[in-house]
Length: 138
Image (cartoon, rainbow, N blue to C red; front, side):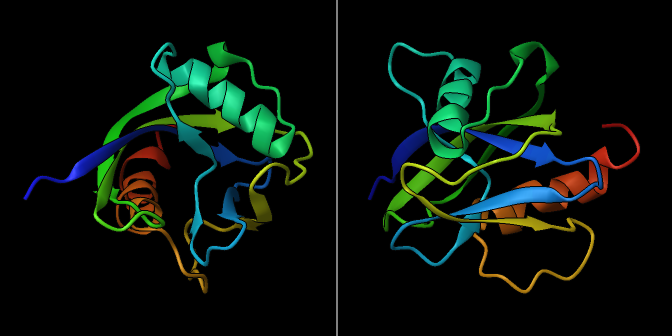
């Protein structure tokens, strides 16, 4: 059996207080990094900028985005699919407003206990990577 891949771009958004932003899509339970699917004509950073504008009203400066790598995990909302994510780190100091399919946003301490249901990509890959590799160097 082959697993179907969904190519996405995702952001590890860090606020001035060190917390990171997670989103929950309408009709779902798991929180995840903001971002979304990469269209065939887009580069990952272009897709991320488009998704952040659509979902959060957030305009980013792509020059400020640091590519953290490519991560893979089971898709949270599409059974039988795997997400292949290009993940970018961005520091932001601007308000975000849930829009499009985003129902809820939460700022969390990425180092503390997290009492939320997390998407596998967030809970098993991105946040552990951030804790291990980025705190001193990102």
